[in-house]
Image (tube, rainbow, N blue to C red):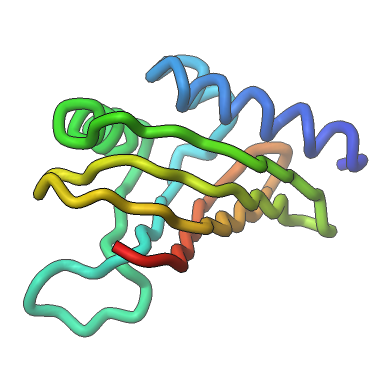
Length: 128
């Protein structure tokens, strides 16, 4: 894929995520899509973080975040194609499910296969 095609794919994914559009997300991701979260499940030592599988899993995570996180903002978004991955960097602020404010710098890595995103690896750095 060209850099322009990679950025267009990312735009479609981002739009699907922002609108919680299941069909839009499905069109941008592979059937075996996985989201490797920034944290692991309690009681595990998995370095990959909690893994959300498929568009149905993404939709559940979006719904949970909308119900539990408040005043979420995103700033300083930068997206860069890099071979067969797309790098996305941004800053997010908000209040988490415990009522704690957060301010985080985020890097998401999106590997692409056959013109679709097959994984989202999320890395957070910040102070809670």
